[in-house]
Image (tube, rainbow, N blue to C red; front, side, top):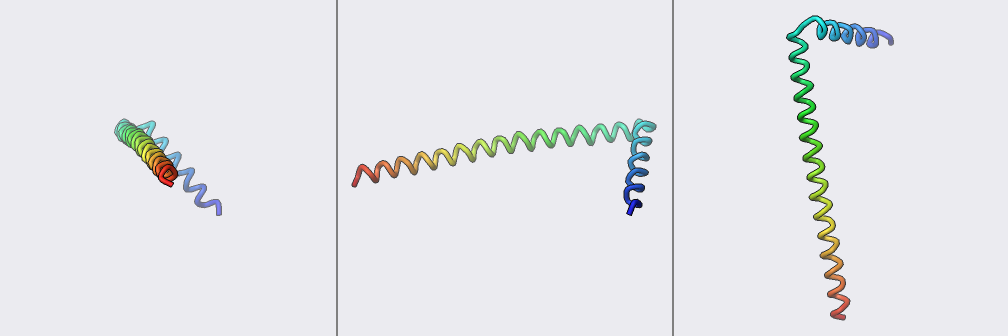
Length: 76
């Protein structure tokens, strides 16, 4: 049962040592983290835009429905 935990700690410690000792590993890690942040920011921006467009479309449909209901009431 504790074996996966011990392996995880060993791998984590090895990764920290490699990061601290190697400029190449540090550079690659920083590049990957930078790209990940960039991707996350783009995804958040796109999601906000899509939610905003969806909200606008839903509001327009609701307004259109209300206008149609008013017209139907006036016709009767």
